[in-house]
Length: 256
Image 1 (spheres, rainbow, N blue to C red):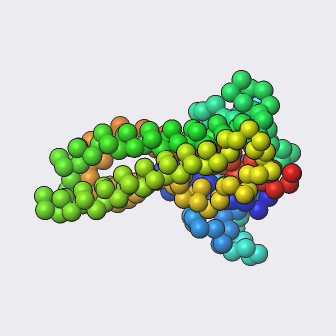
Image 2: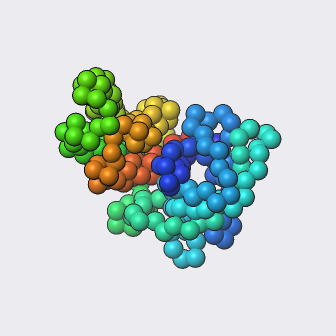
């Protein structure tokens, strides 16, 4: 499959796109090709989250530590191997078997999932998660005026431009997920119709965080907002998982 998933560095939460190449035992092989929009330069020891659970040693893991990296002569970028180290903290509707390359989809009861119903549930959850981000961000806006490291004059402009823009993006992304959900709500919708409704680039853009960690850390004292920002990061983790699952459903639709 040549459709990239979303992964992230576990320290900075910086997103990158990767292709899953395979694996064996508790190791996963993946590539960050030069043609993807979101790239990271990884080195051995880097800790990453795949936002896709892998079953290994009778358990589920979605985080790993990079053990080897080499240049990708064919596609540019890098090819890496990561050892799975972090157990999945969430109940996932999908998991992968690194050794066999098989993908399993489940519903909330653990039974095999019906693809269209799963896609509807994922888009509903994406809209809910973005609305959750909106609520948390609304709560921390009043704090910014007390913890900003810029002058009052600069903060007034910051609030109008930066914070207003972020709030608008969050609302627009939540609305986009709701619209996609409505587009596949018809009773006669089948999984083969999914590529005609979902644009994976637009979907990825809607999933991406609206809050830039580096920018916020340079302007605001994060210790005061840590509780809210950490809650937002958990929602963003869920959004990336949902995106990766939708990519798998999209790929299955192309083959149907």
